[in-house]
Image 1 (cartoon, one colour):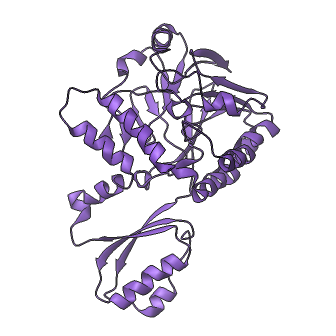
Image 2 (cartoon, one colour; image 1 turned 135 degrees about the horizontal axis):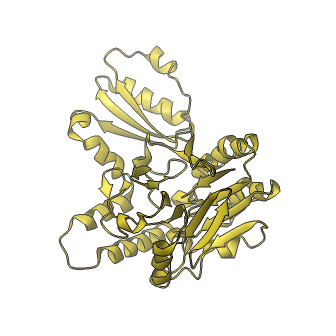
Image 3 (spheres, rainbow, N blue to C red; image 1 turned 90 degrees about the vertical axis):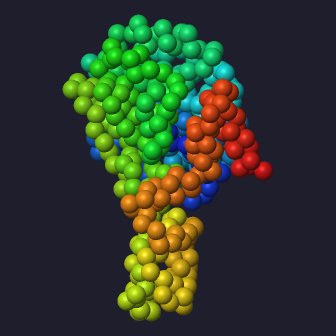
Amino acid sequence: MKIAIITDMHLGVRGDSKIFLDHQERFFNEIFFPYLDKHEIDTVLDLGDTFDRRKYINYVTLGRAKKFFFDQLQSRGIEYHAVVGNHSVYYTNTNEVNSMDLLLQEYENFNIYRDEPVELTFGSTNVIMVPWITKTNSETSLEAIRNSNAHICMGHFDIVGFEMLKGAICDHGLSKELFTSYEQVYSGHFHHPSEYGNINYLGAPYEMTWSDYQGKRGFRVLDTETRNLNWVLNPFAIYHKIDYDDKDMTIEDIANLDMTNIKDAYIKVIVKNRTNPYIYDLFINKLTDGGAADVKSVDDSLDLEDSGVDDILDETKDTKDILHDYVRSIDTKADKVRIKELIDELYSEAQNI
């Protein structure tokens, strides 16, 4: 038996952007469901953060998400098991009010786990699925994790020592030692895929911020007999970097510029040499007229590769990431986890003003 595992879909990401919804829909239409059909996979596990917004849902996002994801599951008779993630819940101290329970009641073969961990069997593999851990369910969740005899533990975890995003290491949450009894541990929550020992952060299925640039994206398929976990890669990127050097560039070169994948893309132009302002303007206009969603120019007068500045620029594309990095760096006795939770709430509210 083979089952598909996906996590951190964040439907409605970037302020319910149509461009990102189109990007997500393309992945499901051209990669996810064709693979499930070809390999006759009839079980999907979702490890949390299915929707992006915690406080409310955009009707356009919900309608489109139902058509390109949830309706497709039901029409195929696929059994869907999902844990709620931190983006699924309205309150920070309980999972009781969550988007999954409220928005997906009409679907058959859908199983949503919001409070206590549940043990399931797929083929010859026993799995424990753990919803987002809060103050309300912490005691029962940790006890279940410690005492379960399941082969694989799956959930939406904060685990100390793993990369939340490139260069940012989680310094709070659960200890790796809590999971030593399991053959494998699969988690959502951190969008950057990483693996250490028996613990595997699966990562998001597609790019959502510049920090995802050129990262490995897609979903996983688990063979429940061998317990081998394999990637199914997403080849589509929304973020692109283009080197610009006009020392030997002509107007004809710009006219013949490869515009593949430019439409609705986020472009960062790395300026190596800019000697002709007219040629430069033609180049930028070519990208803009080609339908790029956003074009930013970065002066390469510094050695970005060696200095690490380029990585910093990628991370600072997302305002929330900047604020989280600052909180991690300050010396304070205050509860940094709670500060970051408040930042997330305020950031989400500010996006919708």
